[in-house]
Length: 437
Image 1 (spheres, rainbow, N blue to C red):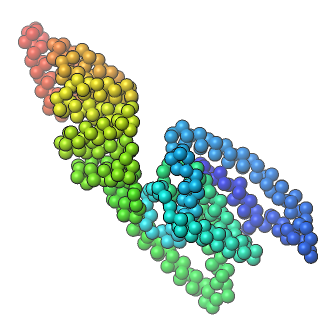
Image 2 (image 1 turned 60 degrees about the horizontal axis):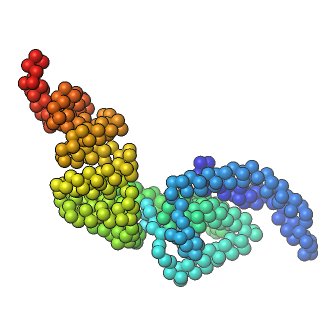
Image 3 (image 1 turned 90 degrees about the vertical axis):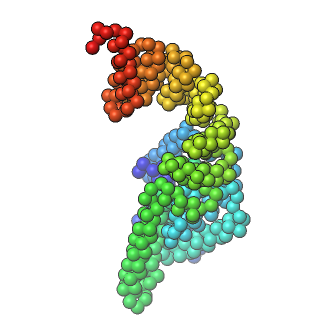
């Protein structure tokens, strides 16, 4: 009941009124000898629709809240990015793909990218399939209403997520089928026994077919679960069954970089940028992977490319500042870290690293201010306490430095560098004040 796609509930309830509840007086649609429909049909129709109005009001509220939340989150894709004709074409193709993957759930993917263009024969073919199945369902629905109800259930409940209003850049998603598939299974559960009712040994045959279907589903499920072992396995499988999937190339590149497999990570991140050159996060993470290999100049170019697409990207500024610091350019590093802090004042790492750059330049007072600002964000961060201790030691404020080293060791007792710095500070303090023990 929490899913926005259940906004279609009033329409589904009207379908259930038709069958199996049989509350619509369809016999009045055409009276005796071609007479006009009886008013009983229209009166009943108004009554059935009126009783759904409270549900319709709830659905409208859910739709409004969902659209507002998605707009605020920046998930709704503008028509300028994905024109409506392309969305409509994708919707037709997606309906048929959903139908096919329900009948045979193969080549499932965690993310299906939205295509830049769809071949016209594919669109026309999908439209033809939908019209053909719809006509067959309506024709069969005269005697077997479950066919019409099941097919309309599938079409209607999938409508909110078919992509006419695009949220995210996926062309379709397997998770959207949990409710629409019920309509297809309604048609199958009542239709298959009806179609085989006159067959000899029909019940035995249906039992065998049901067993085969269950075993096939179990085998496919077992196989699919194997792809969800970890992110890398899932993303590699998705790339095998989809094309031009920039987001999955990006995700795989990030995961591989975290695992230290930099060469493959760099290839995937570059592939993501080939498909979508303005992908800021891909530029940023490609820079991170290149820096991890020691290719600082190339990393710098990627961070700068990220900032051309998004000048206020705090991570790109901070990463570029780190490269400048590694190349011995503290002034440039300070400028980038300050830009990162300006873009995201709550960025702890940018604050802490700004302190490091200021300390390397020799501006200890400014460095101490940044370390303390960082510790107000994360009071239990051992690195910031240790860095602050070093800066205070260099200023000769040994008592304050000792307190910071002790705070760092309470958080991270096995940090050898902090322990060594504490011993040095204590030794210097004892030399300057021999009364202290």
